[in-house]
Figure (tube, rainbow, N blue to C red):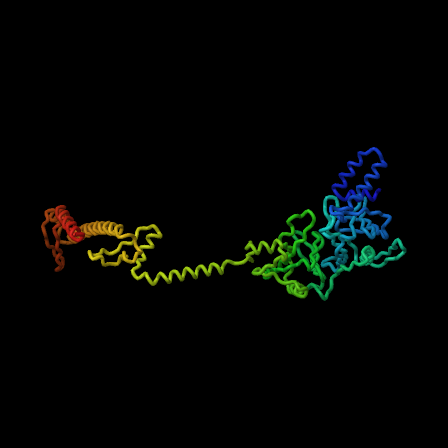
Amino acid sequence: MADARAALEQSKEGRHFLNLVGKCADDALKTELIVAGARLLTVGTRGKENALPVFDIKSSFLSLKGLSFINPRGKFDLSFSRDALCLANAKGNIIVPTGLLTHVAILDQIPQDSKKRCLMFMVLDRNGAPVMNGKQRLEVIIIQTLETDTMSATTSNGEVLDGPVVAVLCQAVGMCIPNFTNFMAPEPEKYKSARGHAAVSAVAKVNSGHLFPLPKALVFVERPAIFVPHSDILAVEFRRPQSVTFDLVLHTAPREAPGESGAGGSIQKVEFSQIDKGEMGRLQSYFANSKIKLYDPVAPPRLGNGGGAAGATAGGGAGGAGPSHGAAEVEQIGEDDDDDNDDDDDDEDFDPSLPEHLISGHPPAKRPRTDPSGSGAGPSNASGAGPSSGRCDVDMGEEEEEDEEDEESEDEESEGEDDEDELADLTDEDDLRADDVRQRVRHGDGMHATDGGRRAHLKRPRSDDDVEDEEEEDEDEDEEEED
Protein backbone atom coordinates (compact mmCIF):
# COMPACT_ATOMS: atom_id res chain seq x y z
CA MET A 1 0.00 0.00 0.00
CA ALA A 2 2.88 2.39 0.73
CA ASP A 3 4.15 2.08 -2.83
CA ALA A 4 0.66 2.68 -4.24
CA ARG A 5 0.31 5.81 -2.12
CA ALA A 6 3.75 7.03 -3.27
CA ALA A 7 2.72 6.57 -6.90
CA LEU A 8 -0.47 8.59 -6.38
CA GLU A 9 1.44 11.41 -4.72
CA GLN A 10 3.41 12.04 -7.95
CA SER A 11 0.48 13.73 -9.68
CA LYS A 12 -2.01 16.42 -8.79
CA GLU A 13 -4.94 14.15 -9.55
CA GLY A 14 -3.46 11.39 -7.42
CA ARG A 15 -3.04 13.69 -4.43
CA HIS A 16 -6.61 14.86 -4.81
CA PHE A 17 -7.73 11.22 -4.93
CA LEU A 18 -5.83 10.48 -1.72
CA ASN A 19 -7.55 13.39 0.02
CA LEU A 20 -10.94 12.00 -0.94
CA VAL A 21 -10.01 8.48 0.14
CA GLY A 22 -8.75 9.81 3.47
CA LYS A 23 -12.34 10.72 4.38
CA CYS A 24 -13.34 7.06 4.23
CA ALA A 25 -13.83 5.51 7.68
CA ASP A 26 -13.33 1.90 6.57
CA ASP A 27 -9.59 1.18 6.55
CA ALA A 28 -9.94 -1.95 4.42
CA LEU A 29 -11.94 -0.08 1.79
CA LYS A 30 -9.45 2.78 1.92
CA THR A 31 -6.58 0.38 1.17
CA GLU A 32 -8.42 -1.18 -1.77
CA LEU A 33 -9.21 2.26 -3.22
CA ILE A 34 -5.60 3.42 -3.00
CA VAL A 35 -4.28 0.27 -4.69
CA ALA A 36 -6.94 0.47 -7.40
CA GLY A 37 -6.22 4.17 -7.99
CA ALA A 38 -2.51 3.47 -8.36
CA ARG A 39 -3.24 0.77 -10.95
CA LEU A 40 -5.37 3.19 -12.94
CA LEU A 41 -2.37 5.47 -13.35
CA THR A 42 -0.70 2.85 -15.53
CA VAL A 43 -3.47 2.98 -18.17
CA GLY A 44 -3.46 5.79 -20.78
CA THR A 45 -6.36 7.23 -22.72
CA ARG A 46 -5.68 4.86 -25.65
CA GLY A 47 -5.12 1.77 -23.57
CA LYS A 48 -1.33 2.19 -23.55
CA GLU A 49 1.05 2.83 -20.70
CA ASN A 50 1.14 6.60 -20.35
CA ALA A 51 1.54 7.10 -16.64
CA LEU A 52 3.81 6.24 -13.76
CA PRO A 53 3.90 2.57 -12.73
CA VAL A 54 3.41 1.43 -9.18
CA PHE A 55 6.87 0.92 -7.71
CA ASP A 56 7.25 -1.96 -5.36
CA ILE A 57 10.40 -1.61 -3.29
CA LYS A 58 10.52 -5.37 -2.98
CA SER A 59 10.97 -5.65 -6.75
CA SER A 60 14.15 -3.56 -6.73
CA PHE A 61 17.40 -5.44 -7.23
CA LEU A 62 19.71 -2.65 -5.98
CA SER A 63 19.47 0.26 -3.55
CA LEU A 64 22.14 2.96 -3.13
CA LYS A 65 21.89 5.14 -0.07
CA GLY A 66 22.51 8.87 0.36
CA LEU A 67 23.39 9.94 -3.19
CA SER A 68 23.74 13.65 -3.87
CA PHE A 69 21.50 15.07 -6.62
CA ILE A 70 21.68 18.43 -8.40
CA ASN A 71 18.30 17.93 -10.09
CA PRO A 72 16.15 17.39 -8.11
CA ARG A 73 18.33 19.06 -5.52
CA GLY A 74 19.00 17.15 -2.35
CA LYS A 75 20.02 13.72 -1.11
CA PHE A 76 18.02 10.63 -2.11
CA ASP A 77 18.18 6.87 -1.81
CA LEU A 78 18.14 5.47 -5.33
CA SER A 79 16.51 2.09 -5.98
CA PHE A 80 16.60 0.20 -9.29
CA SER A 81 14.05 -2.23 -10.73
CA ARG A 82 13.28 -3.45 -14.23
CA ASP A 83 10.28 -1.10 -14.48
CA ALA A 84 11.35 2.05 -12.69
CA LEU A 85 13.86 4.00 -10.65
CA CYS A 86 12.76 5.35 -7.29
CA LEU A 87 14.24 8.45 -5.62
CA ALA A 88 13.23 8.43 -1.98
CA ASN A 89 13.83 10.74 0.98
CA ALA A 90 11.92 12.02 3.96
CA LYS A 91 9.77 14.29 1.76
CA GLY A 92 8.48 11.50 -0.47
CA ASN A 93 9.24 9.37 -3.48
CA ILE A 94 9.85 10.21 -7.12
CA ILE A 95 9.11 7.39 -9.55
CA VAL A 96 10.96 7.38 -12.89
CA PRO A 97 9.84 4.70 -15.37
CA THR A 98 12.83 3.15 -17.10
CA GLY A 99 11.03 3.50 -20.42
CA LEU A 100 11.44 7.29 -20.17
CA LEU A 101 15.22 7.14 -20.05
CA THR A 102 16.65 8.18 -23.44
CA HIS A 103 20.31 9.19 -22.84
CA VAL A 104 22.89 8.99 -20.07
CA ALA A 105 25.94 11.27 -20.18
CA ILE A 106 28.96 11.08 -17.89
CA LEU A 107 30.49 14.56 -17.51
CA ASP A 108 33.91 15.08 -15.97
CA GLN A 109 36.84 17.48 -16.40
CA ILE A 110 34.58 20.39 -15.53
CA PRO A 111 36.42 23.70 -16.03
CA GLN A 112 37.39 25.67 -12.92
CA ASP A 113 36.13 22.88 -10.65
CA SER A 114 38.57 22.39 -7.80
CA LYS A 115 36.45 19.57 -6.31
CA LYS A 116 36.87 17.44 -9.45
CA ARG A 117 33.24 16.49 -9.61
CA CYS A 118 31.77 13.94 -11.98
CA LEU A 119 28.14 14.26 -13.05
CA MET A 120 25.70 11.61 -14.27
CA PHE A 121 23.24 13.36 -16.59
CA MET A 122 20.09 11.27 -17.28
CA VAL A 123 17.67 12.55 -19.94
CA LEU A 124 13.93 11.78 -19.79
CA ASP A 125 11.55 11.61 -22.73
CA ARG A 126 9.50 14.83 -22.90
CA ASN A 127 6.75 13.07 -24.81
CA GLY A 128 6.25 10.48 -22.13
CA ALA A 129 4.41 10.60 -18.83
CA PRO A 130 5.47 13.59 -16.71
CA VAL A 131 7.77 12.88 -13.78
CA MET A 132 6.90 15.41 -11.09
CA ASN A 133 8.91 16.74 -8.18
CA GLY A 134 6.14 18.54 -6.36
CA LYS A 135 4.85 21.02 -8.96
CA GLN A 136 8.00 20.88 -11.09
CA ARG A 137 8.28 18.52 -14.01
CA LEU A 138 11.61 16.73 -14.27
CA GLU A 139 13.15 16.41 -17.73
CA VAL A 140 16.68 15.70 -16.53
CA ILE A 141 18.07 13.93 -13.47
CA ILE A 142 21.62 14.86 -12.43
CA ILE A 143 23.59 12.85 -9.86
CA GLN A 144 26.74 14.45 -8.45
CA THR A 145 29.79 12.48 -7.33
CA LEU A 146 33.53 13.04 -7.07
CA GLU A 147 36.02 11.51 -9.47
CA THR A 148 37.76 9.88 -6.50
CA ASP A 149 34.59 8.41 -4.94
CA THR A 150 34.28 4.64 -5.05
CA MET A 151 31.70 2.16 -3.76
CA SER A 152 30.80 -1.50 -3.61
CA ALA A 153 27.22 -2.81 -3.77
CA THR A 154 25.60 -6.21 -4.10
CA THR A 155 22.48 -6.84 -6.16
CA SER A 156 19.56 -9.02 -5.05
CA ASN A 157 20.93 -11.96 -7.04
CA GLY A 158 24.34 -11.67 -5.35
CA GLU A 159 26.22 -9.84 -8.12
CA VAL A 160 28.84 -7.43 -6.76
CA LEU A 161 29.24 -4.01 -8.34
CA ASP A 162 32.28 -2.02 -7.26
CA GLY A 163 34.47 0.78 -8.55
CA PRO A 164 33.91 4.53 -9.05
CA VAL A 165 30.40 5.55 -8.08
CA VAL A 166 29.56 6.72 -11.59
CA ALA A 167 30.66 3.34 -12.99
CA VAL A 168 28.41 1.48 -10.56
CA LEU A 169 25.49 3.70 -11.54
CA CYS A 170 26.03 2.99 -15.23
CA GLN A 171 26.13 -0.76 -14.56
CA ALA A 172 22.87 -0.53 -12.63
CA VAL A 173 21.18 1.32 -15.51
CA GLY A 174 22.42 -1.35 -17.89
CA MET A 175 20.83 -4.01 -15.69
CA CYS A 176 17.50 -2.12 -15.71
CA ILE A 177 17.55 -1.69 -19.51
CA PRO A 178 19.63 -4.52 -20.98
CA ASN A 179 19.63 -3.12 -24.53
CA PHE A 180 20.36 0.46 -23.55
CA THR A 181 23.23 1.87 -25.63
CA ASN A 182 22.81 5.66 -25.38
CA PHE A 183 25.70 6.21 -22.98
CA MET A 184 27.94 9.14 -23.90
CA ALA A 185 30.97 10.92 -22.50
CA PRO A 186 33.39 13.63 -23.66
CA GLU A 187 35.92 12.51 -26.27
CA PRO A 188 39.06 14.68 -26.61
CA GLU A 189 39.43 13.77 -30.28
CA LYS A 190 35.93 15.15 -30.92
CA TYR A 191 36.32 18.33 -28.90
CA LYS A 192 38.85 19.82 -26.54
CA SER A 193 38.82 23.44 -25.40
CA ALA A 194 41.72 25.84 -25.82
CA ARG A 195 42.57 25.23 -22.16
CA GLY A 196 42.42 21.46 -22.47
CA HIS A 197 38.98 20.97 -20.89
CA ALA A 198 36.02 18.97 -22.14
CA ALA A 199 33.69 21.96 -21.82
CA VAL A 200 33.64 25.73 -22.26
CA SER A 201 32.20 28.37 -19.96
CA ALA A 202 28.96 29.90 -21.23
CA VAL A 203 25.75 31.58 -20.10
CA ALA A 204 22.30 30.13 -20.73
CA LYS A 205 19.54 32.68 -20.19
CA VAL A 206 21.00 34.46 -17.14
CA ASN A 207 22.86 31.57 -15.52
CA SER A 208 26.54 30.78 -15.88
CA GLY A 209 27.52 27.19 -16.51
CA HIS A 210 29.47 24.87 -18.78
CA LEU A 211 28.70 23.65 -22.29
CA PHE A 212 29.87 20.12 -23.17
CA PRO A 213 30.18 19.36 -26.89
CA LEU A 214 29.71 15.58 -26.87
CA PRO A 215 29.96 13.20 -29.85
CA LYS A 216 26.19 13.11 -30.44
CA ALA A 217 24.79 16.00 -28.39
CA LEU A 218 25.46 19.23 -26.53
CA VAL A 219 24.88 19.36 -22.78
CA PHE A 220 24.73 22.43 -20.53
CA VAL A 221 25.06 22.18 -16.77
CA GLU A 222 24.14 22.98 -14.11
CA ARG A 223 21.11 25.27 -14.23
CA PRO A 224 19.21 25.22 -16.44
CA ALA A 225 20.03 21.66 -17.44
CA ILE A 226 19.93 21.55 -21.25
CA PHE A 227 20.35 18.59 -23.58
CA VAL A 228 20.33 19.08 -27.37
CA PRO A 229 20.98 15.99 -29.52
CA HIS A 230 22.61 16.50 -32.89
CA SER A 231 19.55 15.02 -34.56
CA ASP A 232 17.51 18.03 -33.40
CA ILE A 233 19.95 20.69 -34.66
CA LEU A 234 19.03 22.17 -38.05
CA ALA A 235 21.74 24.85 -38.15
CA VAL A 236 24.25 26.59 -35.91
CA GLU A 237 24.86 30.34 -35.83
CA PHE A 238 27.82 32.30 -34.47
CA ARG A 239 26.85 35.83 -33.44
CA ARG A 240 29.15 38.76 -32.60
CA PRO A 241 32.25 36.97 -33.97
CA GLN A 242 34.35 40.17 -33.81
CA SER A 243 33.78 40.71 -30.08
CA VAL A 244 35.86 39.38 -27.20
CA THR A 245 33.08 36.86 -26.55
CA PHE A 246 30.56 35.46 -29.01
CA ASP A 247 27.11 33.88 -28.85
CA LEU A 248 26.27 30.40 -30.08
CA VAL A 249 22.69 29.89 -31.33
CA LEU A 250 21.32 26.45 -32.16
CA HIS A 251 18.35 26.40 -34.53
CA THR A 252 16.52 23.23 -33.53
CA ALA A 253 13.46 21.27 -34.51
CA PRO A 254 10.67 21.55 -31.93
CA ARG A 255 10.17 18.83 -29.38
CA GLU A 256 6.55 18.93 -28.35
CA ALA A 257 5.69 17.71 -24.90
CA PRO A 258 2.22 16.57 -23.80
CA GLY A 259 -0.07 19.50 -23.11
CA GLU A 260 2.11 21.95 -25.08
CA SER A 261 -0.19 22.51 -28.03
CA GLY A 262 1.42 24.54 -30.79
CA ALA A 263 4.94 24.10 -29.44
CA GLY A 264 5.89 22.16 -32.56
CA GLY A 265 4.78 24.88 -34.94
CA SER A 266 8.10 26.61 -35.53
CA ILE A 267 11.84 26.25 -35.34
CA GLN A 268 13.23 26.96 -31.89
CA LYS A 269 16.45 28.67 -30.83
CA VAL A 270 18.75 27.63 -28.00
CA GLU A 271 21.32 30.31 -27.20
CA PHE A 272 24.56 30.11 -25.27
CA SER A 273 26.25 33.48 -24.79
CA GLN A 274 29.55 34.97 -23.59
CA ILE A 275 31.76 32.20 -24.94
CA ASP A 276 35.43 33.13 -25.18
CA LYS A 277 36.48 34.10 -28.71
CA GLY A 278 39.38 31.65 -28.57
CA GLU A 279 36.91 28.74 -28.67
CA MET A 280 35.22 29.77 -31.93
CA GLY A 281 37.55 27.92 -34.28
CA ARG A 282 37.37 24.73 -32.23
CA LEU A 283 33.58 24.83 -32.07
CA GLN A 284 33.36 25.49 -35.81
CA SER A 285 35.47 22.41 -36.44
CA TYR A 286 33.33 20.41 -34.02
CA PHE A 287 30.10 21.26 -35.86
CA ALA A 288 31.68 20.74 -39.26
CA ASN A 289 32.90 17.26 -38.25
CA SER A 290 29.43 16.53 -36.84
CA LYS A 291 27.85 17.40 -40.24
CA ILE A 292 25.90 20.31 -38.77
CA LYS A 293 25.63 23.19 -41.24
CA LEU A 294 26.10 26.87 -40.51
CA TYR A 295 23.05 29.11 -40.39
CA ASP A 296 22.40 31.00 -43.62
CA PRO A 297 20.08 34.02 -43.20
CA VAL A 298 19.38 34.02 -46.95
CA ALA A 299 18.22 30.39 -46.84
CA PRO A 300 17.23 29.68 -43.21
CA PRO A 301 16.47 26.10 -42.15
CA ARG A 302 12.96 24.80 -42.71
CA LEU A 303 10.89 21.96 -41.34
CA GLY A 304 9.82 19.39 -43.90
CA ASN A 305 6.60 17.42 -44.23
CA GLY A 306 4.37 20.48 -44.00
CA GLY A 307 5.79 21.63 -40.68
CA GLY A 308 4.80 24.94 -39.19
CA ALA A 309 8.03 26.71 -40.06
CA ALA A 310 7.97 25.49 -43.65
CA GLY A 311 4.42 26.67 -44.03
CA ALA A 312 5.26 30.08 -42.62
CA THR A 313 8.18 30.61 -44.95
CA ALA A 314 6.28 29.30 -47.93
CA GLY A 315 3.67 31.91 -47.24
CA GLY A 316 6.21 34.71 -47.38
CA GLY A 317 6.38 35.20 -43.66
CA ALA A 318 8.82 37.19 -41.61
CA GLY A 319 11.64 34.85 -42.54
CA GLY A 320 11.53 36.16 -46.08
CA ALA A 321 12.06 32.71 -47.63
CA GLY A 322 8.71 32.54 -49.34
CA PRO A 323 8.31 32.72 -53.10
CA SER A 324 9.18 36.16 -54.38
CA HIS A 325 6.86 38.15 -56.63
CA GLY A 326 9.84 39.87 -58.22
CA ALA A 327 9.44 38.04 -61.54
CA ALA A 328 5.85 39.17 -61.86
CA GLU A 329 6.87 42.72 -61.04
CA VAL A 330 9.63 42.71 -63.67
CA GLU A 331 7.23 41.35 -66.25
CA GLN A 332 4.70 44.08 -65.46
CA ILE A 333 7.38 46.77 -65.68
CA GLY A 334 8.44 45.46 -69.08
CA GLU A 335 4.87 45.68 -70.36
CA ASP A 336 4.60 49.29 -69.19
CA ASP A 337 7.82 50.17 -71.00
CA ASP A 338 6.50 48.63 -74.22
CA ASP A 339 3.35 50.73 -73.93
CA ASP A 340 5.41 53.89 -73.54
CA ASN A 341 7.47 53.01 -76.60
CA ASP A 342 4.32 52.49 -78.68
CA ASP A 343 2.93 55.87 -77.68
CA ASP A 344 6.13 57.70 -78.60
CA ASP A 345 5.55 57.02 -82.32
CA ASP A 346 2.35 59.10 -82.39
CA ASP A 347 3.33 61.89 -80.02
CA GLU A 348 5.01 64.35 -82.38
CA ASP A 349 2.46 67.09 -81.49
CA PHE A 350 2.43 66.14 -77.83
CA ASP A 351 2.60 69.04 -75.38
CA PRO A 352 4.13 67.76 -72.12
CA SER A 353 2.47 70.51 -70.10
CA LEU A 354 -1.02 69.24 -70.87
CA PRO A 355 -0.87 65.75 -69.29
CA GLU A 356 1.12 67.20 -66.43
CA HIS A 357 -1.73 69.61 -65.80
CA LEU A 358 -4.33 66.86 -66.05
CA ILE A 359 -2.43 64.56 -63.68
CA SER A 360 -1.29 67.06 -61.07
CA GLY A 361 -4.40 69.27 -61.03
CA HIS A 362 -2.27 72.45 -61.19
CA PRO A 363 -2.96 75.10 -63.87
CA PRO A 364 -0.91 74.62 -67.04
CA ALA A 365 2.08 76.77 -67.91
CA LYS A 366 1.32 79.84 -70.02
CA ARG A 367 1.90 79.40 -73.75
CA PRO A 368 2.87 82.08 -76.30
CA ARG A 369 -0.03 83.82 -77.97
CA THR A 370 -0.93 82.47 -81.39
CA ASP A 371 -1.93 84.29 -84.52
CA PRO A 372 -5.40 83.84 -86.06
CA SER A 373 -4.13 81.02 -88.26
CA GLY A 374 -3.80 78.81 -85.19
CA SER A 375 -0.08 78.14 -85.59
CA GLY A 376 1.90 77.96 -82.40
CA ALA A 377 3.21 75.66 -79.72
CA GLY A 378 -0.15 74.55 -78.39
CA PRO A 379 -1.52 71.02 -78.85
CA SER A 380 -3.22 70.19 -82.12
CA ASN A 381 -6.88 69.22 -81.98
CA ALA A 382 -6.36 66.90 -84.91
CA SER A 383 -4.23 64.55 -82.80
CA GLY A 384 -7.04 63.93 -80.37
CA ALA A 385 -4.78 64.36 -77.39
CA GLY A 386 -6.41 67.52 -76.11
CA PRO A 387 -9.98 68.45 -75.10
CA SER A 388 -12.81 69.06 -77.62
CA SER A 389 -12.56 72.01 -80.09
CA GLY A 390 -15.32 74.08 -78.47
CA ARG A 391 -13.79 73.81 -75.08
CA CYS A 392 -10.36 74.61 -76.52
CA ASP A 393 -11.62 77.87 -78.12
CA VAL A 394 -13.09 79.05 -74.85
CA ASP A 395 -9.91 78.22 -72.97
CA MET A 396 -7.73 80.00 -75.53
CA GLY A 397 -9.93 83.11 -75.42
CA GLU A 398 -9.76 83.24 -71.66
CA GLU A 399 -6.00 82.77 -71.73
CA GLU A 400 -5.58 85.62 -74.30
CA GLU A 401 -7.58 87.99 -72.11
CA GLU A 402 -5.47 87.05 -69.12
CA ASP A 403 -2.31 87.61 -71.17
CA GLU A 404 -3.53 91.09 -72.27
CA GLU A 405 -4.30 92.10 -68.69
CA ASP A 406 -0.88 90.92 -67.60
CA GLU A 407 0.81 92.90 -70.38
CA GLU A 408 -1.11 96.08 -69.51
CA SER A 409 -0.18 95.79 -65.86
CA GLU A 410 3.45 95.21 -66.85
CA ASP A 411 3.37 98.35 -69.10
CA GLU A 412 1.96 100.44 -66.26
CA GLU A 413 4.60 99.15 -63.87
CA SER A 414 7.40 99.85 -66.37
CA GLU A 415 6.09 103.39 -67.00
CA GLY A 416 5.93 104.08 -63.27
CA GLU A 417 9.49 102.82 -62.91
CA ASP A 418 10.65 105.14 -65.75
CA ASP A 419 9.09 108.16 -64.00
CA GLU A 420 10.78 107.22 -60.75
CA ASP A 421 14.13 106.80 -62.53
CA GLU A 422 13.82 110.20 -64.22
CA LEU A 423 12.92 111.84 -60.92
CA ALA A 424 15.89 110.18 -59.29
CA ASP A 425 18.19 111.42 -62.07
CA LEU A 426 16.98 114.99 -61.58
CA THR A 427 17.34 114.95 -57.84
CA ASP A 428 20.90 113.69 -58.25
CA GLU A 429 21.97 116.78 -60.24
CA ASP A 430 24.28 119.02 -58.27
CA ASP A 431 23.07 122.33 -59.84
CA LEU A 432 19.32 121.84 -59.14
CA ARG A 433 17.38 121.90 -55.94
CA ALA A 434 14.88 119.18 -55.19
CA ASP A 435 12.01 121.67 -54.82
CA ASP A 436 12.65 123.08 -58.32
CA VAL A 437 12.68 119.61 -59.80
CA ARG A 438 9.37 118.65 -58.22
CA GLN A 439 7.74 121.92 -59.31
CA ARG A 440 8.84 121.58 -62.94
CA VAL A 441 7.71 117.99 -63.08
CA ARG A 442 4.34 118.97 -61.63
CA HIS A 443 3.84 121.56 -64.43
CA GLY A 444 4.98 119.13 -67.11
CA ASP A 445 7.89 121.29 -68.29
CA GLY A 446 10.85 119.61 -69.95
CA MET A 447 14.14 120.64 -68.62
CA HIS A 448 17.79 120.00 -69.13
CA ALA A 449 20.44 119.64 -66.50
CA THR A 450 24.12 119.38 -67.02
CA ASP A 451 26.61 117.47 -65.01
CA GLY A 452 30.18 117.48 -66.22
CA GLY A 453 29.14 117.65 -69.90
CA ARG A 454 26.30 115.07 -69.49
CA ARG A 455 22.65 116.01 -70.13
CA ALA A 456 19.65 114.51 -68.37
CA HIS A 457 16.24 114.77 -70.08
CA LEU A 458 12.92 114.70 -68.20
CA LYS A 459 9.85 113.51 -70.10
CA ARG A 460 6.41 114.85 -69.37
CA PRO A 461 4.51 112.29 -67.24
CA ARG A 462 1.45 110.69 -68.84
CA SER A 463 -1.96 111.73 -67.61
CA ASP A 464 -4.86 109.40 -66.78
CA ASP A 465 -6.52 110.36 -70.09
CA ASP A 466 -3.47 109.15 -72.00
CA VAL A 467 -3.57 105.80 -70.22
CA GLU A 468 -7.30 105.33 -70.96
CA ASP A 469 -6.74 106.17 -74.66
CA GLU A 470 -4.00 103.56 -74.89
CA GLU A 471 -6.19 100.92 -73.24
CA GLU A 472 -9.05 101.63 -75.71
CA GLU A 473 -6.63 101.32 -78.62
CA ASP A 474 -5.38 97.97 -77.31
CA GLU A 475 -8.95 96.67 -76.93
CA ASP A 476 -9.77 97.73 -80.52
CA GLU A 477 -6.72 95.87 -81.76
CA ASP A 478 -7.74 92.75 -79.82
CA GLU A 479 -11.26 92.84 -81.29
CA GLU A 480 -9.82 93.13 -84.79
CA GLU A 481 -7.59 90.13 -84.14
CA GLU A 482 -10.52 88.05 -82.86
CA ASP A 483 -12.58 88.99 -85.98
